[in-house]
Length: 117
Image 1 (cartoon, rainbow, N blue to C red):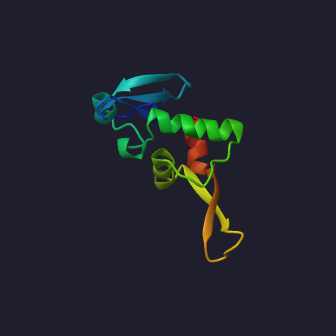
Image 2: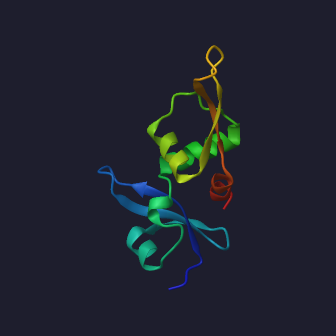
């Protein structure tokens, strides 16, 4: 079934299962959609390519405040990098050019597209 929805992020239950998916339609209206309907209608992107609500809020925070995350990476940041929504900006460490230091993260075009739906 063709759909006018596009997935934004997933809602997780306390046990870690996907409850609902926040979607947006072509008219710009955002709403939660039950996961079974999301799958049945073949809404894109696939569930495994969507961030969680918490990860999505991190993307928005980075974009809105231009906040630069320090070198320490959280689990959420690592997942956003692996999904292609963030990229690491690295430079050689000051005292040892063989060592790379993560300076900050920035949104990729994919990340910008997701938060600007």
